[in-house]
Image 1: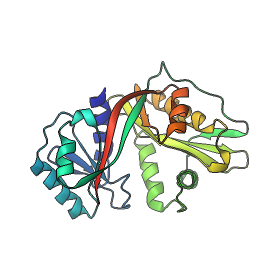
Image 2: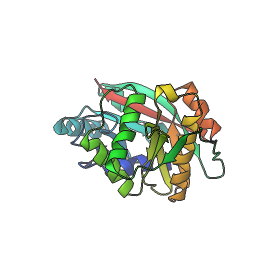
Image 3: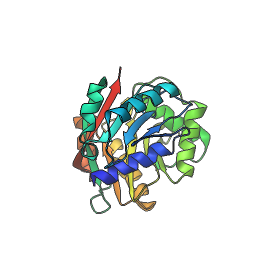
Image 4: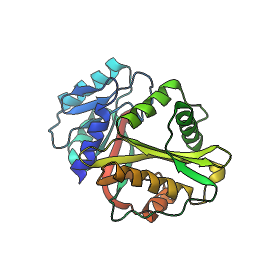
Amino acid sequence: MDARIQQSVVATLSTRPAALDVGPFVVGVDPTTASPHINYATPRPGEAVTAADVTALIDAFRAAGRRPRLEYVASCAPALEALLLAAGFVPEARHTYLLCVPDTLRTPPTPDDVALVEPDDDEQRAALIGAQNDAFGEAAPATAADVARLRRQQEAGGVAVMAVAGSGACLGGGGAARPTDGVSEVAGIAVREPYRRRGLAGAITAETTRRLFAAGAQVAWLEAGGAESWRVYQRVGYLPAGERLYLAMT
């Protein structure tokens, strides 16, 4: 399963507008944003990696004007961490990822006066992104590039879900890329602070996952940002699985 999860990351990065193949790595480069959460590299599962490969990877990042950074499933490149540390990378995080399959998914009730819908125009996409930015502590509104990125994800077969109040305000949401080999990551689950602790995060996660399974996924995976979100995800049927590493150069 680790290899399938890692391959789904490879596939996602390969769809970036200026993606690069650098030896055993794929580098997801998006010229419209410098966000390290979008511009990063990952190794292809099972391929050997050398110190020379890491040097070439650093050079590719610098040529693209991006900070060298990687995310990957640890077991798929067991020797890579030592090579990265020797090259000057610093660990950012070490997270357990969680898995859900159709048989384990549990759907909690949606809070009253809230509808979970898929954004179907750019105004709604901007509202969803704005709610996610707000929930993650970023005051910036959605840019045209952000909206276009989400539109491309949907047009490619991905999923987006927004929680809309009766007033029309977007309270939060989430999404997922098109499944690769039956696998996709659920990401960006977010709820604006005034609307938390009402069960909305669980409802958004479950609905995003349900739509992903309806689109043909066999396995959904995600990562928890802390103990509270971990509990939310487990309640809707996600179970801990493998480990992912995050490393970057300062």
